[in-house]
Length: 293
Image (cartoon, rainbow, N blue to C red):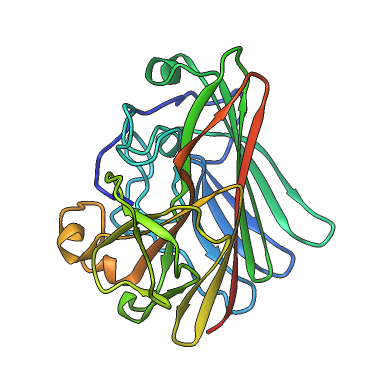
């Protein structure tokens, strides 16, 4: 994942007729918590019910408005991954103001929210497509689920790439292992050359920027004493990213030494863009579940 400080154009920043909160708080009946900023439909906090420990990294230097992307949490990458195409780096969804579709409580106590982004004159000036994107977030117990759906509301097909760029908070990235990628081909972001990962576990000793192609749908992020299980649907690829010390020093919105306390493991559709025809819809999801290490 290329994590530089480039800013995409701000899109759709008009307030609705009724006051709408800038930050949505989801609290399940069992106490599990998630926070979502409408700026980017960006999940910035996840605290499972069991221990209440924060599981997402969020930089104290991050911006939360304007044309800057939030550094940390779960940025929504759409309709382009990184600089792999003609659009602004990582697309415009992560810097757009999304509408609040609704907040609800399920019968089992799960807290749920939907945020919506539609095309506008400003988006069509960047990417000539008519669309409706919905980010659905649910939290309860030991699980956070995030689903992204994209509907073609126009009369012509379009293609896109996308990812959920999750910054997982860790105590020390040097102690982290990622399980489940053995034998999976990968490439460096921006490079088409494929290699194959034959290690039993992936470690993150410093800089890493890999797109794993046709990744297994189940991965595990482990550190001493705890783990997070990652399950993806619809997202065929996975990205592992950390800027390392040298790269982190170039990121003005990252806390000094912050790279030691996160690793990004992203569900994505990157290697083969998604193409959807008129009135068709695509959906992908990632479920994160905490467990003992």
